[in-house]
Amino acid sequence: MNLMTLQRYKNEIILLLALFFVIGAFLYKVNASSYVEENKAHIQQQIAEITAINKYKNQWDGKSMPNKVKALKTVVDASKVKSFSKKSKKLVASYVNLTANDLNKINNKLINMPVQIIKLQVTERSKNIYSMEFTCKW
Image 1 (spheres, rainbow, N blue to C red):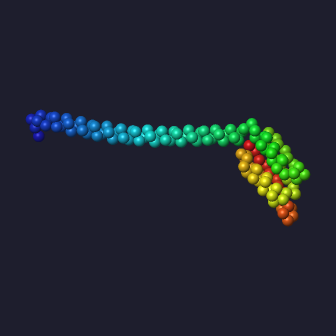
Image 2: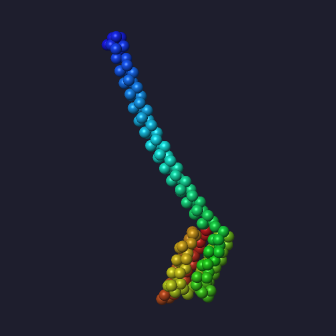
Image 3: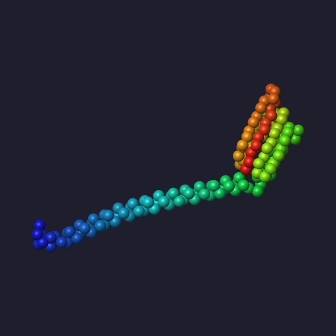
């Protein structure tokens, strides 16, 4: 190839280089926009997780938790409550002479509360008579 041939096809070569540049720019734009969309979705997911964590934190550390925990004392008759002590954010309770229905009421109430159960011990004293002891914190 000599210089005259290149001069003759100068416009076509410029057009070919411009076409390569346009194709490269288009591919870059597509990759960049997909990257931005992925990051946007990831950031929205993180924001949703942070708001959920904040809601759970408010629920676990709410001002009304001590009152909700006190409700465990009134689920069954006062004669069946052996001990019930609440210190700061910890509850230790013990029940005796519980029927199966009483035991289910206490368990349902305890499970539906936002507390961490540290210890849960249920023993059968005699046929269909149980005693229960648990420790939980919030």
